[in-house]
Length: 618
Image 1 (cartoon, rainbow, N blue to C red):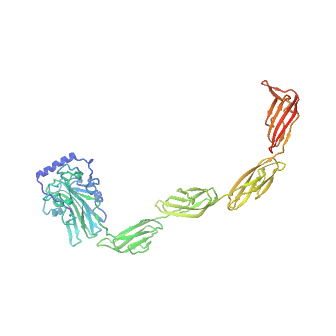
Image 2: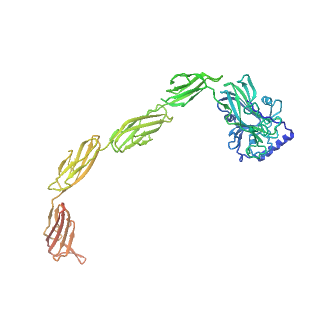
């Protein structure tokens, strides 16, 4: 496919003007302010990656340009070019295309001449060819039509209209689907016509719908570009025989002299098939876990046959279902279009699926029940990297080693999902894996709560409950004795005191509860008061004190015969030693008879008052 621009020959004055414009361009050029950005001197691999799209097989790519900066990549997304990015080839440099258009006739002579036969055929007569940039390659399209999207720009606008101008072209040589063959056939045509896109055919006077005038820069619409004129985005459409071999050239050449440069913006990956007609396999998933299946669909052929048969539900037809147990390369063959390749292969990778497994350290117990779960999952190869536990009560965990505490009774279903580093998943669920039981409720009553040593029998009535059934009862009476009696029972205490009885009940699942109640066994009430004492410090009968038991409270006063208080105590164990305080000094009382008063509350909360005399002897 060929695309050309035709320009008029220029005289020496015009050539000199081009050289001056080169100097001015160097002085005024700035990348920082331009929205068009370019990158010259790219590699063949980058060139191929930017220009060629799907459905075309490219080989023998050759870039015949006079200078490295005659071709490169561009980005015009922020401009009004209409083509966001792609490849730019020029008769000057790619940097020269960057605006603003502040030179009427920008030119850069890169110094190499050529005599390309396709260019000569395009202009119709031998002309000197300057500063060529010719890209050629072999191409096998997998379709019957492929396209190239482009914009052409030139400094030849508008003063060079009328004769032969700079040439750009897409030249195609190869089989013509209408018969015969193409030979340097140009497909740079105006839409729906056989009119080539040239400066003479597309300008401010002719075919103006396809032209954008940037000559005077009055509108400032295209100030990002140096070129005086630009075409609108155009598409070259090339009919071909699918899967046949073609040779193609993309060329831009100065004709007659190296002045007034031109350039072609080729849209990113636009040299591509409109629809792929090679037999290809498509699948919704080419990487499986063992046990999974995928659908394989052959496109671009008929009468398809698949091999190997292993793992396939059928070996014929456009669509099959593959369920391989190991990584397998499947090949499909069929009747293609034209001379297109009629087979394709695809690798279905099968990764091992883990086997999820786990074990709790116990399967039953009373709440709150804490259980440690052990991951026992396995995988033949690869590595398990993810764990997801569901404990059946709404709680989850991502740990490999999980511990969970159940706080309510019930039967809980536990599941574990494990994931490998390749994304394969397996799960294991154990229904009612954990049974958590409610413990019994221990309770009992006692009668009486308080008694005395004359009647030391306490009656116990068991009122414990359990939803499953109580299996054992154990009573501890607080005096060292116990019994396993079940319900109502009595116990006789041998001594006075406060005794706390504990009841421990166990249900059929081994769940335990206990409770405690206390009873008082009070001693008998007795009180002894001596009638004399001898406080002579001989260690015998030195203190006047009452003795007794069965008392809750005790209070004693000592008075002399005139009613003066000499002593007071609230502790039965603290008696009077016969001394009193007088004028700030402690002195032993005279030998005499003294009055005592005692107030007692016994264990039955009965108040008792006593009065008597005591003789102090020396």
